[in-house]
Picture (tube, rainbow, N blue to C red):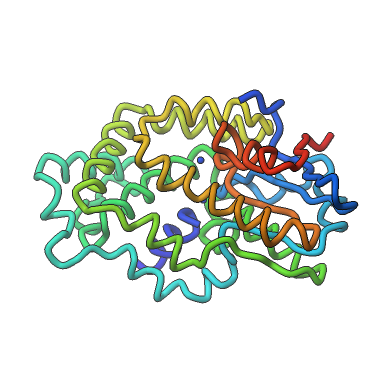
Length: 297
């Protein structure tokens, strides 16, 4: 259970004419400094950073990096944060899912965990934590065994960006605390979480989620933000869920960036690629605030 919770924590800490680009330069006409915006895939190979044109030069130039959370702090707090994933005593999976639902969950998980897997093993977890576990397994299957091993060791792309920054003597800025992020990701009503879980199980069993995971992996590894945006638009996430997990957070982050961070220092921002595209994405929010945001070539 400890390894499962750690894997869930790591995967949860990571959703339009974007010129097929995941790395952007941010300029303010009132400042001579340049900042940068990188869209990450939380489960992508660490070597991906070395294939992004201009990334190494940008890292050398900036004073700080900014991310969704401080990844090192998240790992330090892992035992306490795991509590966010545990269901209330009256809301165990065996209580909120039907017998047929539990059977379907077992079939979905057995694709990755082996034929002897029993869904009752996940009973202590909130439905949202189980949904995250299914997504993690689908994504890691698309990425391959080497990346699965890296994730098991607590390494992922966002933490690698922050580790490189720290090694170079730069500071790390977090938009959210790890506790805030876990409350957000695991805080929806249990009934809504159960509905989302059943949808995830259905899509896992019919192969939809596996195909989407492969498409997302291919889109990210080819640095194609247009394709990532299309997958987001075609997802079955509700407007309420997109507001809670993507758009409201984008607005909060853009406010912090434009009022506190960008006016005072050069920074490399590394957040999930799903936060970049669209009218409510970080690229347009920064442009609307008067910044020039352009692809790094």
